[in-house]
Length: 215
Image (cartoon, rainbow, N blue to C red; front, side):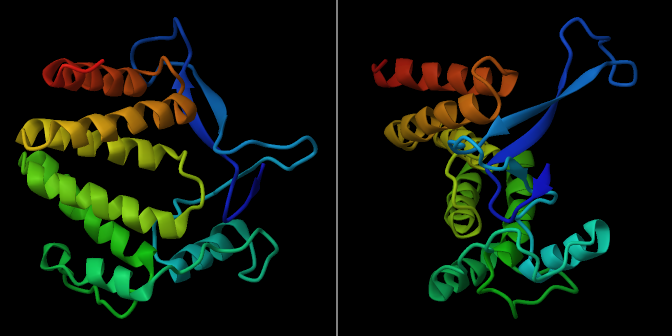
């Protein structure tokens, strides 16, 4: 499968049913899942790299690792988005730069996302749920600039995590329910309806629905 900046599929490895329990001896299969409807005769494409990184770095890695020229016909790069909105997120003290980083490219969503991901990981570890929710919502906002398809595994995971954060903080169960409902739909497409990640989102949604008295 060829690379595209706006792929219509993504790939994941799943352990074969009945395979060995340890990763070293397990047998895995490569699964290709659609991110959007594909017309007859349309090429199936994937992204060779995570698009959630600085545009310049992404293009350079594609050139160095896969010999894809920066002006290659692999689909248009996503629109840069609203620079003011991107700078607003990038300027948050929460996402302060570490040594060696700068904010010269805070009009590039891919330059901001790694900083948000770093804060999100720390907040998850420390159970700082308000920060987790903020990071997820900002990540979703940035991702809309990077990828045109709403059905993407990253979006599903952020939605699920945002719903969990709402549940843990006990602040807004309706918002939690809305996030988790979207997460279940997206993960059902990107991972499969019976994947353990999708099942986790379903279980959390069921709990929130029970707490809110809605099913």
